[in-house]
Length: 206
Image 1 (cartoon, rainbow, N blue to C red):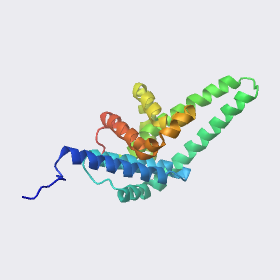
Image 2 (image 1 turned 90 degrees about the horizontal axis):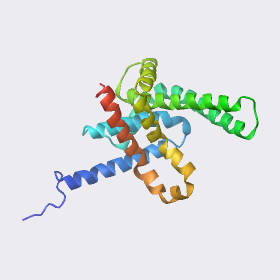
Image 3 (image 1 turned 90 degrees about the vertical axis):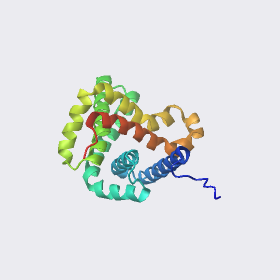
């Protein structure tokens, strides 16, 4: 009698297969984000792949790059504008911390609030682009109002999405030990959490 050790119906092997899929997607995402201007399209592609995997559909690295290419022109202009503002805001806040400028604390506070709002809008916009064919302007409006109306959800989304950036800044020594987790599956795990939240708000999209 032949013993089949790798039963495709086994929960264990299904779990192992899912772990490998998420690790591959995470690695693909990290590599595709190396040129900073591609982060927007990479986020859209990762979200689409994670959602597909949750629905037991195709979510391979090749599919990731296909979604990436399909959405690059759509999402990149929005991402570049947001990136430039965020970079300028961070630069101004750091500058005002080192230079005594009249009203500097007020300006820094305003820049911080606007930056948080932008990140909140992007937290909804990228998933919406991934699951809808609506114009970006319409999705921007939906994302903006949702980020305000669902502020109690937006804040946890922002914290979760910024965690990979905040953690190494605040705890660089610990990050050095956890770098494997960061590269291996952290972004996929966060995206999975995003997908669960976004699905509860907007449903399954198209």
